[in-house]
Image 1 (cartoon, rainbow, N blue to C red):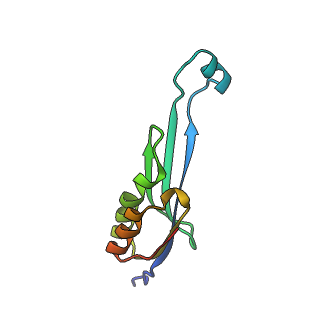
Image 2: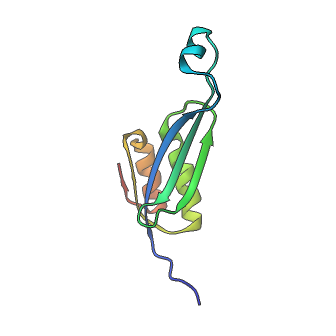
Image 3: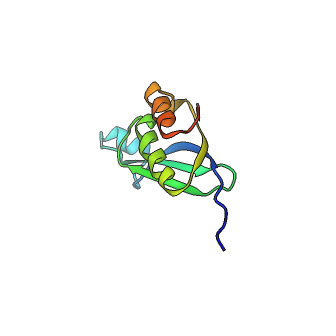
Amino acid sequence: MHAKIRKIFAGIDSTGLSHGQASYYYTKHLKLRRKFIKVSILADMRRQLIYGIKIRHRHRHDSIDFVPLLERAVRLVPISTVVADRGYDSEQNHVSAQNIGIPYTP
């Protein structure tokens, strides 16, 4: 028996993490390069299931990962609506979501 796959209510967000043992003061004082990881995730807001993840090893704008995450998730499950914060609000993201057939609410 197959389960009925409903369209999901998706949300995209990201967070930055520093990796390494050195403190902020130590790296600033000795002018060392701080290591950084940025994680962007697309998830079903109702069931709290992750459908897409992108990990970067440097500072980048949130908007750059919007379309690749959305395209990957659409291959797995149909999406009814996608929401995101201001970091993802760009005309290109609105157009890309509409081309895929998804209403986008920043």
